[in-house]
Length: 231
Ligand code: SF4
Image (cartoon, rainbow, N blue to C red; front, side, top):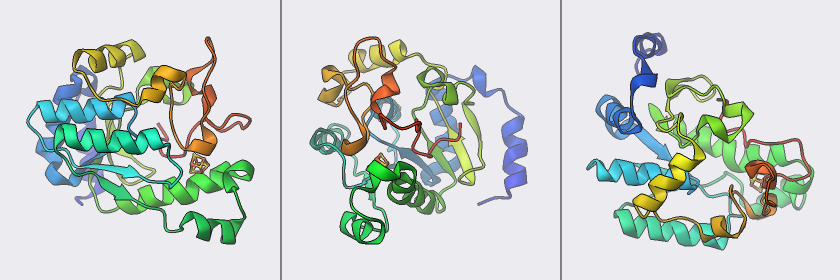
């Protein structure tokens, strides 16, 4: 990777807010080529970005963190996305299997220490994977939660040491749903059953009408993020 100071200077020289989502992806592709990777949890946003990149004629390099406790519907969606867009997606695994984690830290760590569990099953594998790349693309947008309210469209990600692109950062949830409907983007059927945000099985529940969309994640804990997005 180039010198971090040079990249920071380059990033500060441009008004990223003026770019559309498509323009941000096109810039990232031109700037980083195969060194730019798309992170996918197979949310509406993440699959939308794959759709957008493919529609632009790009072959997005997509990876996902397989914690081993994803929903069957998520694994089925992975197959559907792969077929629809003709792409192989890279499966990134934690260093410990679920059995090894249970031996080292006790059964069902997520019930006692979800931060440690996310650290083992998500953050460390992500860090290991991103180390070998120059830029990553995510589907976060500012109206998802207070912790994402100030997220930039393009910035250097100090947490993981590479450039982070959030192409749809200024989109609303309605914009996302409209794009998905208009482009017939494949999505997880659980979204139609009261699950606006879908993560690992043990840490995801349906939300009731009027509840915060992320209330179904780590219910009963203060935790609202996996630790993957500092902003
Ligand atoms: S979301 Fe839950 S099960 Fe998944 S890694 Fe985090 S704590 Fe563990």
